Length: 84
Image 1 (cartoon, rainbow, N blue to C red):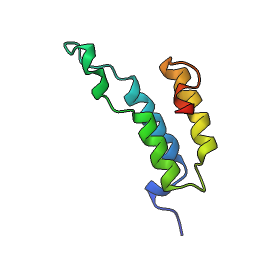
Image 2: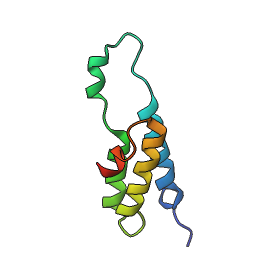
Image 3: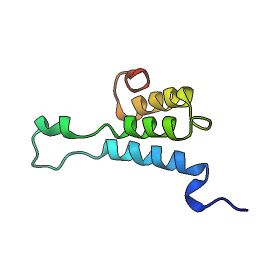
């Protein structure tokens, strides 16, 4: 029997890519930078979800490696997302 469409292995990568894109979206032009703390940590939320939901497929080591990728894409200090 075929797997349902939303249960394939590509869903994890797609949601992590979407989390990176949401993390890169800037605040609206008129908003002050003081509102930046209201933005959720999309990468962290997606990583926590997948580690809890399917630990046999996406573990802590995978989350650490994706955290390093997030550091490179977002321009933060190397190891900031992966060690957090």
